[in-house]
Image (cartoon, rainbow, N blue to C red):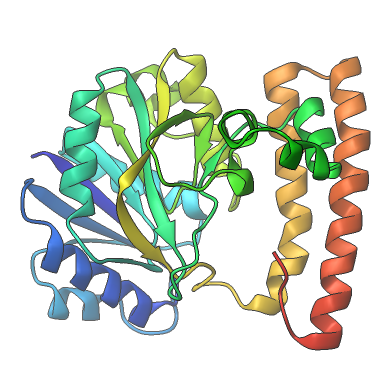
Length: 294
């Protein structure tokens, strides 16, 4: 088996069904299995998925243990050489899985492959990232400075929103909505599974940091594109509150990477002030206009 595709469902029957349907329609050049983990949904009986898609492997969790927990349940049943964690609110529009597996095989030191993503309207999602640092935070705070740099230098230094996402590149971490990695690297993780300390949000960042520490590369693959609806399983109103959780996880990852010394203290002051102010502004804009600014 080439790849085990693990999809987590939590009360998103329609999104998840469309995701599975697109995988079946477009994945042609690799052997694969679809492992669907239902995280104790109450929307409908998870067995409805088996009725629609008889070939899938369905795992019905008795509890909603979160994103990492659900994926680890799927990994226990996975037989593929590669594992693909695929969000339920993604839709394939071409054979992205086969292309990404082939790219991974061409890059034997690749620990993670992430692909190009767009919103349904075609807008690029910033899925190739650099780890946060004091330098990155200050440059992002004073955005006119990166914009004065030549694009080639700016995109390599910053990535994220400073990168056009139109070329393959070695990065620090990629969005977990499409997260492909060789199953064999799990043997180097405690208990042979992904770190599940976070219930939700920040896992992709943490896993990439851990995989890079093992000596592997994290690669962004721009030659194939999927649609990521984004927040299909989360109401927009809750996103602003969840940003606080994301900030907490960012700080925990930084402490894991750099320790709790002076660097962490300085970073925390800059990061909390900058992102706290931005989140406050975003909340004001959303309450007054109903629009979520990026």
